[in-house]
Image 1 (cartoon, rainbow, N blue to C red):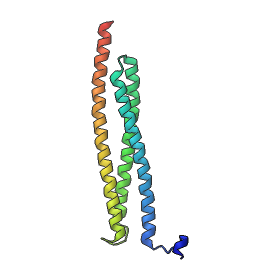
Image 2: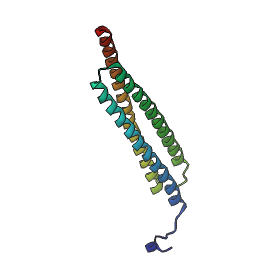
Image 3: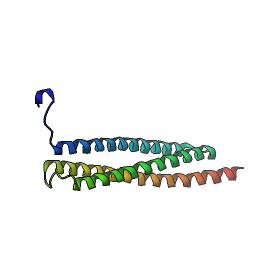
Image 4: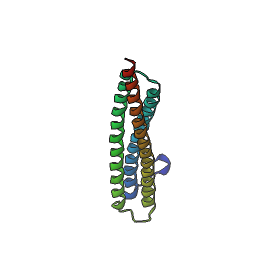
Length: 147
């Protein structure tokens, strides 16, 4: 084919990488979703620090629990898909040490690191949530004492 017109011959390795990078692109979208959810959790946590009324705190807590569940689902989905990519890397047939193999392996390692960093964030958010529940109990107790 004519390279200048964008037509070029593809070998099976190129096609394998095209499919691989489409999957990686989908995972990147999921990471963006995860980042948004974590930001929502962080914002809700900040909001919870300023709230003094029990009903408001309860509403924030419910919203945060819903977001935490969604974060868990998304993180699990990402982990499963990364494991599938790992299996595909072993069975891709491009040959160990080939350019395609190195590219696939490096990309998968990068995705794993990104997920691990995100899981740390999830853990941190869980700790914040526990702290928030302690504050909620204190506020509730104070409200009971005031009545």
